[in-house]
Amino acid sequence: MTLHHSRTTTHTPHKCAQPVQASGLLHIFTRLLLGFALLPLLGACATDAPTGETFPTPDYSYLPPLNLNVTKIDISSPTPPAEGSLAAKSPTPPGAMLELMGHQRLHATGTSGHAVMTIKEASLSRQPHHSLQGSYSVQLDIDDPAKNHHGHIVAHVQRTVVAPQKLGLEHNLYTLNTALMDDINVELEYQVRKNLADWLTDATGTPLNAAAIQSQDISKPSPDAAPAPTSTSQPTPTQNKSAQTNTPK
Image 1 (spheres, helix red, strand yellow):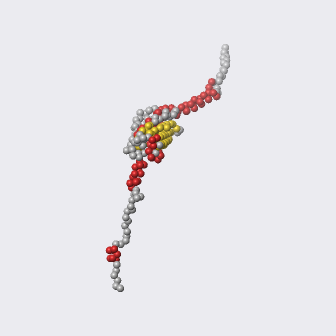
Image 2: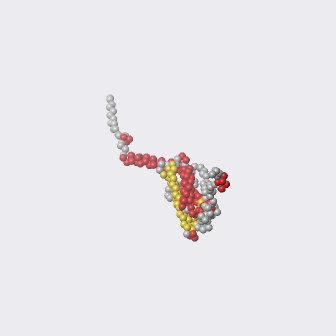
Image 3: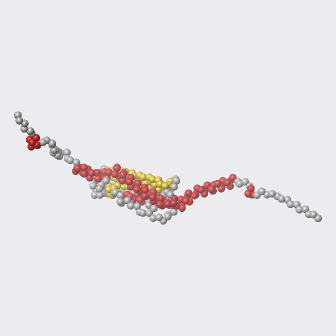
């Protein structure tokens, strides 16, 4: 007896051969974009962490003092930094450094009057292309009602620097703040000497403009003084006599 076996084969399409839905592609593409967008933030978080580096304490007392003809100088506290500011992360906070500059450089040497240095801006912020930007501004107002004398100046500086990530955020902020403080010290002195020169005194309280006028008066001859005698080249009688020649008539 011969047995015949029959088998029916059914072909079922493999699931992987099914076309991918458009919604799945969109989901994958969205996740890739999100990952790329987070990379700079992850890098920033890694370099924003404190590195343990120590930084010198700034000092501005070695710079020339600005002696003002007033009895009192107040230094206002800085306003809170704007949202997103990096000032709080700086090892040398700009607001505190500007206050230190005011205390060390401005001196009251007068007998009346009042001066106020106001910190108008002390901001540090991130910029594109791995850069940092700082903007510092101080205002100095002087008032002496007894003499009906008033003065006002503003010193403002701004600087942008490239901040290598390998150095860390603290190091880059310290470097930027150091440069800005050098700038604001120069600008403050320039503005005071240019626009508030009549308020400046020496260490004893003598106005600098009065000292300059007195020095000029000492070296300048009085208009009533008699003119100094001038020498003449006329020959003396002896010289005339010796120069004569007797000729016979």
